[in-house]
Image (cartoon, rainbow, N blue to C red; front, side):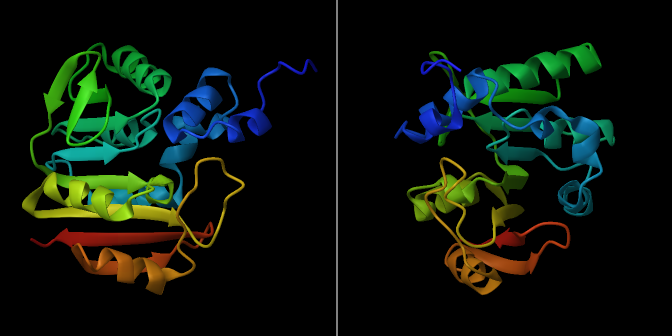
Length: 218
């Protein structure tokens, strides 16, 4: 293999988190699971989404990547807007193309390349209306400023909106881009309790991940 060939080791040397993830995606280094909708819909994680996100909920996924959660919810009959934000343009474009291919249209799945407080595509900003549900799966561990991120999630919810979080249990710094970690469910609960009313925190049965569902609290 050439010394110039893309690799995860080279990705880990990129300090900017967004640029690192873009490098991984653009060079075909990410897991095939990120493109396998059937596998995603059969997972314990997706079962949690189906339990807590109803078809009439306006739903925002922060860190949607290729959007398998949104595509899966749409296939399950979700009628309201499904909006995904991610800072990897290539992954968002994959979601857009897949949504168009599978549905013949674009609505209600929208993939947006951007960050809070408003999403952005090029020079166009998209203010995001309050949502009934926010999905943040495998995202919190990538945040240098966890408190600001949680405030932004909370502020994009309706007064009775809920946020769903999924994080790895313990440190996993081998996965490039992890800058925060949660050693156990109690630690995650304590962090979330500053910003939300925590309804549930538990460990998944099929993987070493922690799931939490929280109610907005102003």
